[in-house]
Length: 222
Image 1 (cartoon, rainbow, N blue to C red):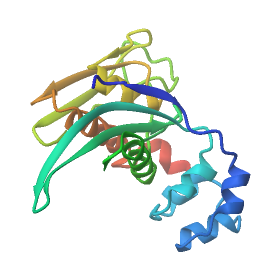
Image 2 (tube, rainbow, N blue to C red):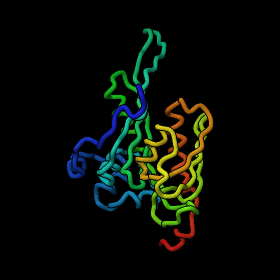
Image 3 (cartoon, one colour):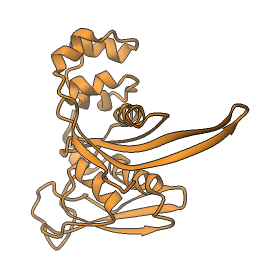
Image 4 (cartoon, one colour):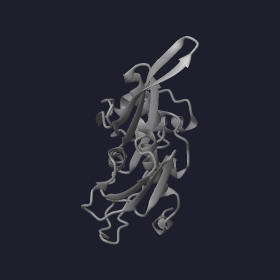
């Protein structure tokens, strides 16, 4: 199936309904339900693990998702050949948060649901900025500096671009960048980019690398 097979917002379930029906099983989940954590930024600031997708549902209620690849996979067992669907989904709020996940199931719908769940567990913040010397507008429309990510044989390098350039990247990378809120970027790729999952994951890892080190702007934060 072609990339971007499906796109749209998450199912219309309010954070209040999720909070009432949810029974947390982790310490972070209990802190979120009790109101001790009211922002997802606090979780990343304290370096706490996200092990329940309901945490993301409550703290980021405006998430959208996009199915970027669906394939049929098979394996041999003693009972014969088993055919399943494998879905790759990217989620994000188009404002600095993005996640990537994949799921397998015998039914298409269940594969999508598993992929969305895993993508929520892999949610990560993305540092945005204007790192291009050709622009220097100061608005968060691109990446602040050159970053790279590698998955399998695919390596993706993202470079800051001036405003109005757009997303100079492949379709799979564009889906991940859009969900993260990146509007302008130059990209350079190497490897077998026809492997959609590795291509998407390399782009995701490149965006996650924007928080690999502390910049002078972070020195003022308490």
